[in-house]
Length: 458
Ligand code: AMP
Ligand code: ZN
Image (cartoon, protein in one colour):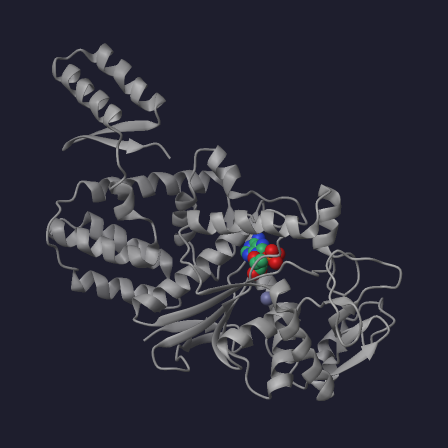
């Protein structure tokens, strides 16, 4: 039995997919006008853990990840500048180059973090037609209206608005801000399509039945998720800032258009923070993977750090925590590499404990404590311990086996061999020179009770 916290019901629920052993999952992807940062790494690692946990339980996943490469306005009130066009202007590049550049880095970072590849990765700019079709339905059904500057969704027509975030129209009105868009019937209506203002030439704009323009922020996710996963699907993921207005609006548009429930389970990890503040592009307080690599850490060190915290607790990033994570992870690798190889069996008792932890709303800190308990358990046969750790790593994704199999270049092997010989002859100084030589080449030697082990310095 799998339990999952659902933002929609605000409680842990027993997970039941629509189709027997298949799960459809949509993950809100990044807006590609700047580098992805550790906040993204956190949210996408949590989505990865969710899919790996389901796979471990025997489900087949169809995960759709979108890339927002268009029309993300700099404020939520559907006015202001377009983040993509703004970034392109600042960097003196065209918008498509900007998108391609940041997408490439984002996909490389996903690989470094060992995130499983989604079955479908789709770009908003490739789905303009699907968005226009959906908007047409909304107009026809009376949920959307046309104005001089675009098409808007009329929130008051959808009585269930607020069911995800708690932001019902009544509540919103009580805390209303000043109206800034004179074209909207209500300040809470949101844009489905924005027309390019007269006399302006945008780099990204498309023809539509209403004139040249570009899509509003939310419509892409409704159009792409339903195209690939159907009108109703199992899981939708995104960071907590996506709950409102983005996901609330997705529900309104999709359910208004289809008359069916849009998504069964909403999965929202909390923020990754730095110095108590949300890490974000706009606050410019962000660190990227390459920033932590420069400090001598790998993306997998970061992944291990993420595993030690629950996705529903806010996560405050510090380098001190990352250092401790790196030390622990290296201990796991070391312990693993010392285990006898052979035909081992997965230990049933430990597997059950591990499964209980991950199936309880992805309790990864508990799962990690099970892993350590197993590593320290002297009663378990080494071969079985090895097999069980390899099995756990299907979910953890720490590359436990791969790291061990990293090929050591013959030159390094030779230096290590010479060093060991010198040490046996008690020629410490000469031996130490060779150790330094090995380190200069990017490797290090750990002297363990089973003899020296060569490792790549990460
Ligand atoms: P964006 O690139 O801003 O569209 O964000 C893409 C995804 O990353 C969204 O699901 C955000 O909620 C998530 N995200 C961005 N910053 C953070 C953060 N500091 N902590 C957690 N998730 C984040
Ligand atoms: Zn989205």
